[in-house]
Image (cartoon, rainbow, N blue to C red; front, side, top):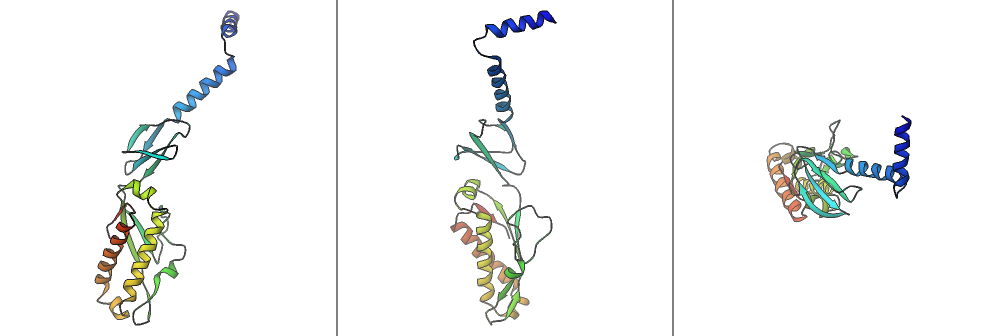
Length: 195
């Protein structure tokens, strides 16, 4: 054991670099190695940014990036059906934009004949273009919420309360869907609205 210590001391003393720098270098290498690998979940695509600038889009799976926050990766759930709920909230939701803070306010609307109606609806969508979704609009989830609420208020405001409650529900749904899709495309949200 004494021989080993003396040999190690002789090797360290002949090195031009101090042992502390060697240990620091080894630790830095280990940290760089562990922070270079990342995984994108199965239902997502990853957007790679180098110093904040878009570099590439990567599919799901295991990938390698530059360490020390030179490259950052944003996973975007492109294969998952997402939804926005208006006028109510399902408990345990994971999408931060799914429910409003004030569902009672957003479901109360005025009809064309100046009556009050309580309207609840859901918008289902998928992210189809992650670059547009992340970089073209500041907050695409809230923007889609605002678009959908504005369209529904416009469509409900053009009809009587009898038409909303009885025979006009299908027409309201179709009209709101077409207008919401048109506005989402015009704003380049990078999403496809399914229903």
